[in-house]
Image: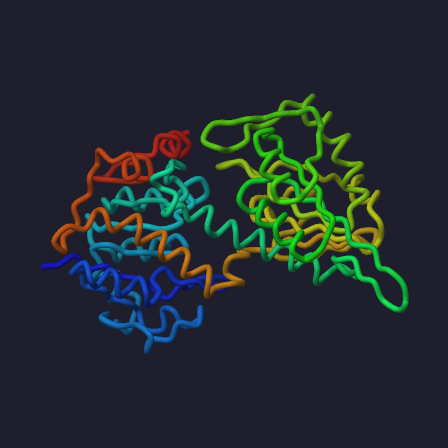
Length: 374
C-alpha cells in the first residue's frame, strides 16, 4: 500500500493557512503517495477544492487523522486530535515544542513520530525547507504595511503644489529574516530606514538594503544564526542608544526573539513616552510577550498618542502566498523520505535527526525533554 499523506482544514480561529496547496498536492501524488484532505482544507486561503487534482476527500477531520500515515499541519494538533492518529504515524508542522507540554507528551505517549519545522537546522541544504524563514519574510512585509496604515503620514517624500512632504523615519529592530524584509519593504515605500541588531554580522545586510545601521557598541553573536541573550550591562548600553533612535522614529517595527524564551523587552514605557504623538510601533514578537513593555497580543494600545500594535499570526493575513511557501517547505522536507511510494526516513540525515521531536515513545529533542522533565 502506498503511504497516505493527509492534511486538515486548520481549526484555530486565527489560522487561515493550509499545509497542502494544489501544486504540492499534485507533486505528492506524483510520488505515488495517496493524498487525503479534509473538505474545505484550503478554502480560507482561497484554494477551493476544485483546484486540487489527484486527491481524495474526507468529510471530517477524524477521517483524515485515522487514515494518515503522514499528517501535514500548520498549527500544532490538539491532544484529542493526537489521540485519533494511529500509533507510529508521522506528524510534520509547527509544533511549538517549548510551549505545548501536553501536546508533546501526547505525541510521545501515542508513539507518534513528529517533526517540528521550527527545529529544522539552518544549513544550506535545508534552506528550501526553512518554514521559519519563509513565514518570517511574510511577517516582516506585512508589519510595514500595518505601520503605514496606522501612521498619519506618508512614508515617501512627496513634492506637491502644496509643498514638499518629508519622508517618514522608520526604525527596524532585529535584522533577521523578518527584519530584513521589513527594511526592504519600508525602503520600497520610500521611507528613510534605520535598523539595529545585536548581531554585528547583520550590518552589511542592513546597509545592502539601503538602510543605516544603528551602532550601539554591543554585539551578541549566538549559535545557529540566532542572537544570544544580553547581559544587564549590555542591555543598558544598548538601551541608551536605541531610546534616542526610537524617539526620532515615526514608525518602529520590532522583530527580536530568542527561541524558547519570552521576547526580550527592548522598548520601555519611558521610551514610548519620548516618541512623538501619532507615531506607531508594530511589535512582531507580540505572541512571545512582545519587545515593547506596553504590547498586548492581538490588540492596539494607545499610550500618549503612540499606537502600539501587537499583531498575532501575521503570515495568516497573507494566507494565499504564505500557504504556497509553507507547503513547498513541507514538500521539500518530506519528498526525500518517499521512495517507491513508501515512507523511508533516513535517520542518518541531520535534517531529519535534528528536527525530530518525538519518536518511538520518546522525546528526541533534548532541550524539550529536559524542559518538560524539569
